Image (tube, rainbow, N blue to C red):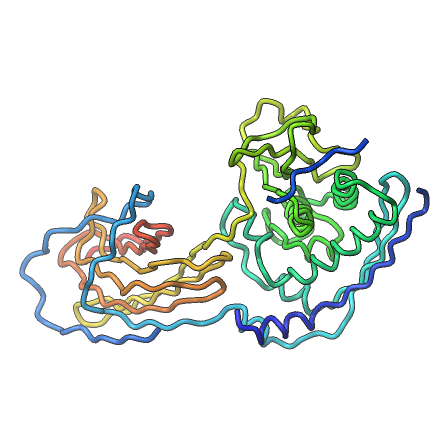
Length: 387
């Protein structure tokens, strides 16, 4: 992301808070912790199909297999997804929202947000992952979250809240947001929201409020993780041993459960329905998430494959290449081709072309793998065909 783009996005932010207390134990939380081109040589087809090659494994080996050096057989180009969104017409409209909640008294807030920043996040693709940390670690809303946190901390300081109470004060705000089902508020059954979307939409479901609260707590400087059950998401707050309640041990630290839906939940309080249920803990670490789409067209005895690989995560994907060929069964491919490897930054799209020889007289399908750091992270197939 260029400094220019960050400056443009920062102009989207307008935030005005009126924080008004209508009414007016201390625990210590741990402190936080490219373009290349090659043309294939068109030759007569072989009289028999060559021996197939093995597919790339979809689980990471202990040490990534080095990428072999091959003669380039691809055309590549990159495009910036975020810049394309930023070039869209910018709305100057302002969205007004009012909030009211209780924590050691009654509080009201008024929030004004430029519609442009809300539209920016609504237009971003939803990464296909259950690791919702990518919604927390997206960098372009950091100035916005920092301003929100500043207002929270100012109000907490005036009320002489402890660090523990300040975190619960922020949690009480998020817990007060109305719960809504994605299927009722969006065209999708599952639609994770970025923090700004949840604020402007005035609520969401459990992953939305957990993403928002994790963003706030992280910006406050406290350790926080996402806690994901099979049908529920909450957060964990890094705490010392004198904090009471349910916690998970992760990275030699304790993370105390904190519910983000429904009012009145305290740090360490676990709803009864999740007692004894296994959960995944996701740290707030930027990660790459690769997706792809492709098209083919006939070129003599070859199929011309064009693949677009998108990095929808928040970290650079290293050693990315496309590996494709025709299905020979038993995890084998006929006539596989591999693009040159490259690093793909977050919010970028990589376009590649591969020429793949079509095997003769076979019942097969095209297999396309996206490989990162030596193992397949995304895979797709064509319909079965007779060649």
